[in-house]
Structures are given as C-alpha cells and as structure tokens.
Length: 197
Image (cartoon, rainbow, N blue to C red; front, side, top):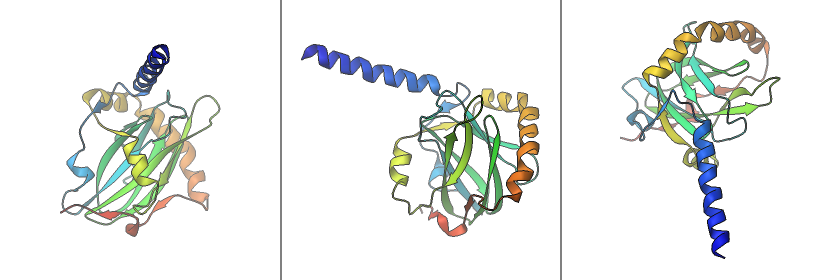
C-alpha cells in the first residue's frame, strides 16, 4: 500500500519535471496579466494557449504580421498561455515551428479573444496551427485551466532577433499558399467576451 503511494508520488513528480523541461527557458512564469482581463483603451487582448502536450519538446513562436513585419508576440510552450494586447481592428497572426501557419482576426475594442496553438505532425519536428476558440466554447475553461501564464524576457527577445531571418523565410515560403486556401482560420469580432470593468 505504502509502496503504491510512493510510486504514484514519484510518477506525479516525474510528470511535473518532464512538463517543466518542455517549457521554453526564454519565457518566464507570471501571474495573470492585467491585459488578460482588461485590455488598454481601443485595444483587445488575444490569449494564445497551448493545452496539448503533443510535440511538447518543440517550441512554437507566435508573431503579429499585420504590418508586413514579423512582430514577436512570444514563445508558447506546451501547457502555457500568453496574453497579447493588440489595437482593435484587423490583424494577421503567424505561428512558426517546422513551418509557418496563419490566422486572421478582426478585434473589437475592450474584448478578450482566445486561440489555441495546435501541434500537428511534421516531417522532422512538430508543425503548428492557430485555432480560434470562441468565448462561448464549452472547452475554453478547461483549456485555460490546463495552462499557466508566461511572458517575455530579454532572452526571448534576443532569441526572436537571432531567428528573424529563419522566421521571415518561413513566412515567405508558406503565406502565399495559405492566402490561396479556402478554409482559413478567422477570429470574428463577436467571438470574444467583454473585458472586466
């Protein structure tokens, strides 16, 4: 009986250590940011989360490419989430792993929106997609609870600068085909929820 409890405790500790080993060392754990519940004036917040642990050893980096430049949002590891505050209006986002994939959004001010970073099989390592999650989704609460908050550090920004050529090459390689596709992920203005007062 005691041996079984010890075995279970060791298994739980091993699982936690494994999950922490999969997290990016460039990001830091943080408490819930203010932007996650209340964006700045004329802005919206997009919560990017990665509840799936499939491909957990591979990191996914996310960018806002609305202006044509690849503006670094952060690294979203398995079991992590990040709050991205953006101006209201139309945005285009990109997630990068082995390849690049994209999602469009039309944000209303004072709204909170959600999207999953979804791993899928790649040739050499995981590829990722962005998947809108309506605020009305029955899975949203469990997805949010399964992830902990992270934020950028000087190390994550250094990593982004060091890898920008590779990121932009993937954007150039994959964006044109994505734009020709018919089933593009999109976050509509009414898919969010009103920010807290």
